[in-house]
Length: 343
Image (cartoon, rainbow, N blue to C red; front, side, top):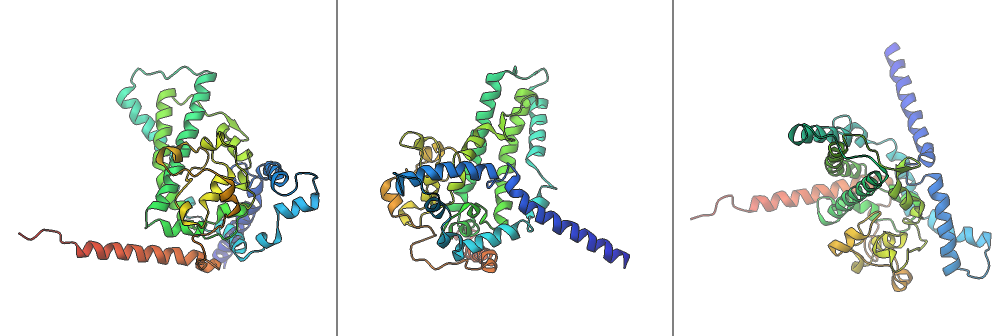
């Protein structure tokens, strides 16, 4: 009986902790729906409202209907988003994975390896404003490139696409759509990012002898914080906003990412970047926002395609079934190929 009570109290504490995590998501600066990011996004939404809806007078009721339309926020696709956001706070396989490996641990190991190999007398670079600023930018670029790489791999590899396709099956978008993800996606993303960013961290530990930290705003890398404050919550929304003809080549605007979610085949596999557009430009996957695209934008995996994830259950099971199917096809192809050529 005592053991049962202990387990019961432990489960209750865990459950309350998960509920607190859901509420805290809106008050944690590491979250994409942090309250400050939502508020600053309203400013950019107001600019979009003035340009596309009413450029003469500001009507609060009309503006709120523009920002939070019922047909989007009560759409069946959005309902699945809400459910995934809540349930995924309880299903956290990445948390268990970090008990065995972490970016920080890989960074420390890499730094020690470099020090033992090359730096017996190395004292590290001099720390000043410029080195810290450069380090902050370089780390932001490295982190963004790893995000770009992870994103591109999920689109290009048929074994990973079913997991990521859940995110792209959204027929409407609102801020919580950013968390329309399968729990397995987080595991794969972690396994890709941890060794690469860990190596970058290890290199900086070696170069600066662990004496430098990136400049931050509200606890986030300065350059990434600027991105988050610049209307990031509009990326997953119906509200179109681009950064203009020059900055659109440098930074990923909400409009860039909305094109990435386009159901039209000509927009498939584009705009993989999160903060910087330079990676897409270099690898030829950049599609710039335009009025023609805005007027004909439709979200989803493909035009007129049936919804593969209409319920929470299907959202969890269908990607796994598709991965199993793809893996089985790979195995069959391998078995058909002869190991040795006949003489």
